[in-house]
Length: 435
RNA sequence: GGAGGCGUCGCCUAGUCAGGUCUAUGGCGCCCGCCUGCUAAGCGGGUUUGGGGCUACAACCCCAUCGAGGGUUCAAAUCCCUCCGCCUCCGCCA
Image (cartoon, rainbow, N blue to C red; front, side, top):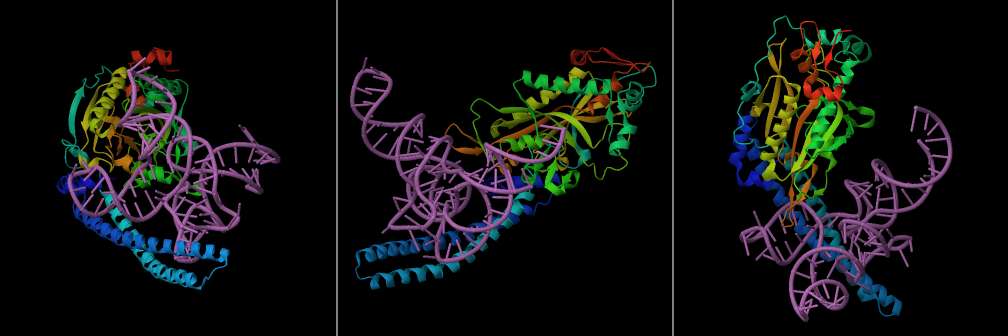
């Protein structure tokens, strides 16, 4: 959620952001009003509570004096009367405090509910509008040219004995698959290359839980707009994560971090699960859109004032990975309306897929600024000793989908696939050949 | 799955049985100051986090915070209930 102080100080900025996202601008005034109500209710309650506490302490004092007098066998009647009087007064106040507390609680809940609905304030420069309003930031390489009719990744994968969709469907249903033989090896090689690069740049590699509790899923921001994308295990009230971002965002939840040595960077390796609800009929062929895949994900905790620079760094490391697999790609600046609530800006790297004649997303890096961390209560200690909310960012280093781009772009007329140079040491093969 | 023990403001710890006349005790660490050729020791003070008020984002005042959430009570670290985590033992299973 966004910072209430920003909302109070600069509501126009938040209104503009909501407008760019195509979200409800009126929410801003709604929440400001709720904030006013919450604060006045809180003041009333706290005042009454303070009074009640004072009176109640008098009861305590009176009771103590009474006890002492009894021990000494003195006259207790007067003390007893005083104690009872104080108790009656406190009792009367107690009723009022309970009512005021309930009212303050309600006002607080209404306020927070509204605040949570406001999306992160977009970074200056993010294009307005919906899914199709992205801007192209950079194009790297020309679409791969072939002097033969290229095969699609599934055809190639089947000939190589690398992908088995049919048996995947038999075992798990549609959108499930087996990676077999060189296919399994290729995925492991790719993911390992991602981990190796991350470690080289100082990331801590992490193998993360893929089942998380509701508060983590909620805090990471995955139960709002796209809740129906998430698998939920009813019997245990746990959620299957669609990315290790969720677990890595939860990793430092409730903690106060020491960022004096720079950002904390983690590289998460995990299986990812997505229901793909509402995408019936889309990308039904092959492993472009599946319910389960593997991913290496960068995750960074940094000071908010460094978030934009960190975002550029994550993008740079994604580019390094794409360069290693030697495929043409472009980078888009996602439009505001296509950002999730937590993201203030998102860059996607999209690789050229020859048989589709278009670019498909291979990586995605988001700057969530303090939005995610505020919900998860992750802070850092400033040089002045104050606590402030950290910024969180994430970005992809490799996923199963990358196999699509690798297979299709590096295929030869005979159905073999040349392994990109950087990947060869991880795979131990230079060329994949049909069985 | 069963039985028991534990969870206190960075770390350790008192308080919980018998609710109150205290503002959660003390030590370690850390920070500031004093003293001091230097260091150590010594002395004094400070040291959870969130929210609200007032403001200069200071000082100060108030509310909450003893694993979490409820409840009882004028009053809860303390009593009751539910949940979570850790430890020990038993059972079951990889």
